[in-house]
Image (cartoon, rainbow, N blue to C red; front, top):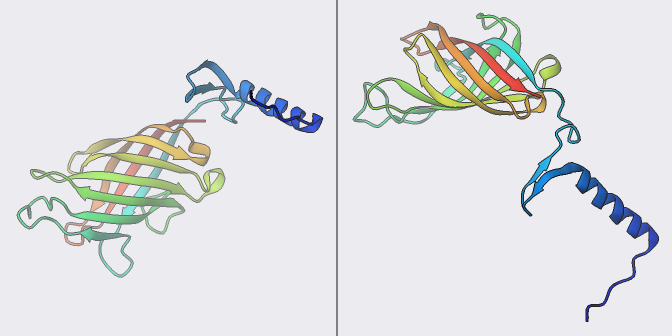
Length: 194
């Protein structure tokens, strides 16, 4: 026969509080491993729709490069540089000039992912360093057909003030130097977040 250990009044009170708290957080169906949570009780407020506009500076050339090649292209795909992969820590500025206000950094990588045309697979975090968004991020993962006038990629998440973010970005080349391969890209981010 199982033996029950005696619970003191303080331990019973704490156990009762913890049990009540878990009941408050868990609502709806309980499948043992998945529970529906009340978003207000875990700090999620009303959902917002935000538009963020900035310029992304991808500098491949020079001593202060912000994009470095970490994987060379396959030798038999010289026209599209298929397989080439670049790690980035690109500046995000309020205006198209590199000297304009720095609002964050785009950190991640992109790879040339097509054998037939210049297409990038982009995986990056927009890490904000300015104002109330300081320390918050938006994560983008998608296909970027660089010679299309406006490209669209999905927002797949975020952190800080962009927790549970979803939406999309539109990228439009502002300038591209075919000699240095440096680019300035205008980004419009449309994001739902709490």
